[in-house]
Image (cartoon, rainbow, N blue to C red; front, side):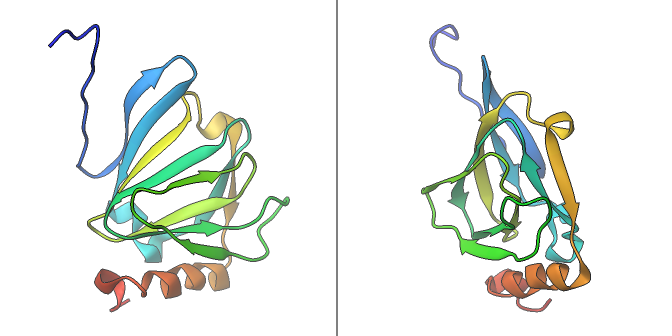
Length: 143
């Protein structure tokens, strides 16, 4: 195979890993790790220079949305369906809950990071919303 014509990459370990970088965008995967445990949910984030596309490849996942205001007042849970593209718009507060076997593909600007993103620390009640949503997954029912 000619590497000038085709790159094949994969990642199924713990965490976030960019797989393909091209000009202004990247494709990455997010795999469950203990930092994504529902009891560790501490914040939502929003990106100020890009949309972010989530595609559930395996397992179960729920997008947690907190609006687009200066702070997060209410959290809406959106159960993800496999192989559907979920485009979280620029400036929208978001986080994700995942089952332990979940893998999510992400597409966003290549330079998305702390310098052009904002973070909102969740209140104890908002953290409990994450736990309640996670209990809908069979592997988190004992939370």
